[in-house]
Length: 323
Image (cartoon, rainbow, N blue to C red; front, side):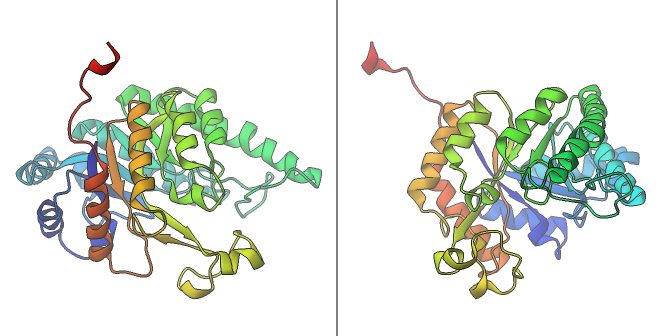
């Protein structure tokens, strides 16, 4: 398993400086933003699509520092009811898949997107309960009339290019937990899988290692984000975890994204790594830094420190003790 980093927190510095720094702190892989909310500070998607020499320069830079690209990232909402916004997100995602093919990067990370609750609505609608019954009707519309037709076509596009699409299960998106991810995979093809980001699962009350087993046993984990979350019970006992308080108001939130080890201890992360190995995941653990209580560099370095002790560097040997 590689220790990787989503390079977005280093977007204010040139990619040459960012990869030199990551090499210096013993990172093995990078996840590069190419559109959507991750932006494209380090990679100009459209330029690289048209310029073979530029693609060669990127490969050479990564090779020079012993880094591989674990994924290209373009998180946006291709199911948005605003046709222009949806078209932009769709173009970003399709072009990211095409660029991944050209760069021999096997995976694109993204969101499922979120439609409106009914035709003609202008705002995406995250449905979290089946009653009153118009909410159940809205959910049926979102899946049957919008999401499944779109993702079937997108999955075929990914398959033609030999690229896996790793969807981050994210609240305020249609797919936000493992059974929804699996439902979308079963409605499309096996190119659709998870960018398994535990940070969004912790505060929903989902057991992360059980979720790894659930998806991993179905070969549905294409990529993994290493990102932690801490639930602060002094707040959650009063207002629960569906918290709309600003992420900047750190003391007043029910939960916060935290650097690895600051939401759950090292023992837990060793269990996560071990469970991923049990289901034969040997890809990157791509650190995503969104901890409001520390700087990007300090958060990344502390995460690398924990994961370095958790990740296995060798393949398992024969179980001689069982013979």
